Image (cartoon, rainbow, N blue to C red; front, side, top):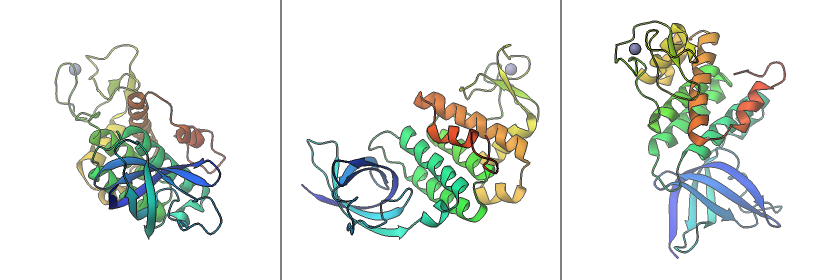
Length: 253
Ligand SMILES: [Zn+2]
């Protein structure tokens, strides 16, 4: 039973048995892994606050060939996002990031780019709050890294290069169509929203934040990306609903 050491991000945890925790985490080298942290819910647990949502940790765990669940031996905190979680709407944004990542990644598929994207996003939420710009960047890039998002500059039917104009798509599907090729049931994406999406996919998050895109088109492209992700995972994201029914002051998507 070899002991493995790696950097990881805690995605989600669930109570297990009397005092244990089932932990889904993203191992920087091996991808998404699930394991058991024995005694993690007991007072004075040796895991301390290392298993909080999106905690960036160094982890040591035992793998067993015959079992799907690894046994988590030890964790050391590299960076915590507990401070960000103190703000309710920021904590909902972090929950969305963790739920999406946990849902879209296959088990044990290396995902270093997603790893860096999560850290970038969580740090940006710490600085900028639960900004739609940050979430739109995260969702668009998660869809792109998953291979579900094509270029946002060509009609999927006729192949025509799309300038800055309104395009159309079927809810949940990433393919965009020009006005000539659209189907009646398709939903429009405004040219402003398309522009935010292209900017997100063409540059860095810093640059996108500096551009400070307007809220309405940002929400629109965020909603498009979330629909694509939900379609792919074949379920509704619980934390997305939390946004939508959020109290006043909570962002709506
Ligand atoms: Zn077309």
